Image (cartoon, rainbow, N blue to C red; front, side, top):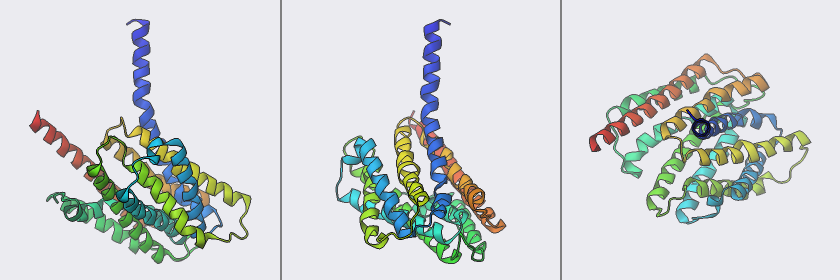
Length: 307
């Protein structure tokens, strides 16, 4: 093998590995959200407002697609995403990071149940088992509600908000499909909707966030991290990676988020989830894996029939 061929092979390997590494970094950055939200003394409205304001600026500055294609559909989906973002922050302030991320991760359950109605997507017989797994996992998370602690003072209310946030994020996912169906361009339809959602959070939460009293430098550094890196940079990486990485690989790599999220909270705050929560979260993660593999196999079968 010649030197040029060796160089081409190495460049090709690097080109294949880089986008997957970007997805991996995205999942790790996403996973730090719960622990960092708990680390700042700012209240939920202040965190939501300033985090999303910074994230919107990062997205608009680094992703040209975020500045294009704004219309009524984008704004409607942005509203759903704004509700999901705010619910996530408030839930993390009220309940454990583990319960928040596991209940939030039940998004596919709502997509399966609402898909036939909102997207005209069929509900398959095999989906019954996935729905049962998600529902069982969520029930176990609620059964595992801890007694109030410093980092989770109102666990039941936080669990309810995390569940509501997952529902709004499911509406966001379905809304992005709705935007994609109505788009004539090849632009990534998620980018303007994500930017719009963060801008909506900033505008709506700003009156509730002011005045800011008693904030320390560490609080503002955490907020800067949440907005510019945990949300902004993570979405920049994800947007670039999904252009070349197959959807199944993206889905599997992003499963690192719900696995690492409770570990960060345990490491930073000593917040240990109960056995019920771990079992319920495990069921939810397994349901996502099963759903992802099922969708992949179904797409392969459909491709084989067409070939």
